[in-house]
Image (cartoon, rainbow, N blue to C red):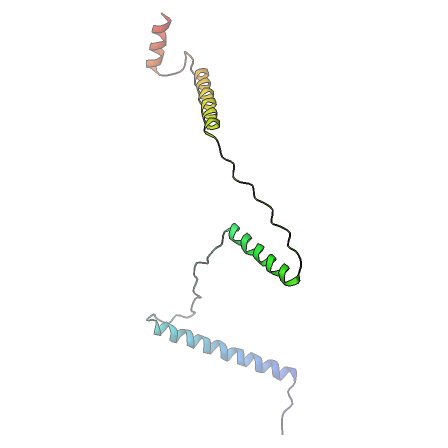
Length: 132
């Protein structure tokens, strides 16, 4: 005669099989460790490898290509991607103007910070000679 399977019996069976599975997995990991020449450990730690990362530009290209594929599959027209602005470049004249302005600003700052009561002994002596 066949015993009827009720939820309690099925739950107990599942728990028993899961326990067996854990024991078998532990034995498999010990055997793999021995195969690789290592000593078996109590719990084999999962291997952690460095995950590859993708740049934001790469993700953007992939997303745009996927949108395009979906639009073609659905028969919807794809709006054109916004045109990216070209990177601005500084002309030689503009760079020279900035350098000149910075030099002027630093010269003014140095001139304002130089007072007769500041500086080294040498500069104080030199200023005293110029004043005399």
